Length: 228
Image 1: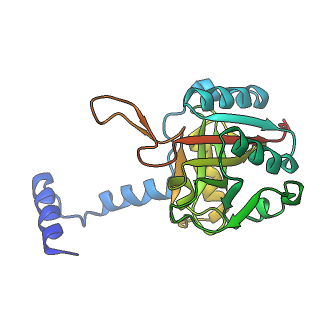
Image 2: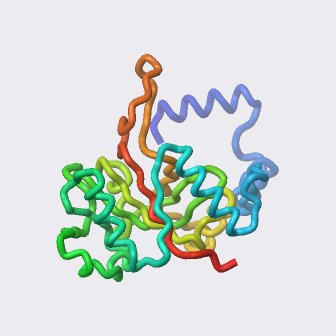
């Protein structure tokens, strides 16, 4: 620990009248970390699953993204190709190593050039698979790793994301529970990105600019019907 940081922390402790070694305070912190207390959960997404999916679609559109609802994962390659054609983009897509994306019938789109790996910023379009969606805000939850590199979330101008209808949760807290269940106690992916709409900023003269810090276009490929 740096001496500057030591100085800052020491000043805070003096102001609080504590020394960081008090057993009750240390136990309180340990209990909170172990207990995973849930934050405030909005009521608007606590819906039957079909209505939850409808809310997710509405919130995706409200966040200035676009969305296709596909019957099957087999329809993803055609939807990707259609998106690229509709925006006059090269028929090239970069995806991660996610086996769910690898298993898609890409051969049905022979004009589509599919590359695998992380983005170096030179690709116009990237494809990822979301861990989950969140109905309350139209948010996509992305876990970092070779399967879905975080660079695909940030560097291409156009980000296409596959999310299964059954993976659309009502609220943020439910998704955190799923992540903990998948990885186990005390383990997390290096990065969990929560993406709501395309990148935007109005920092300069309150003028909205899309693509300021990431993709200027977000297209969601919602796949499958709900099972409940």
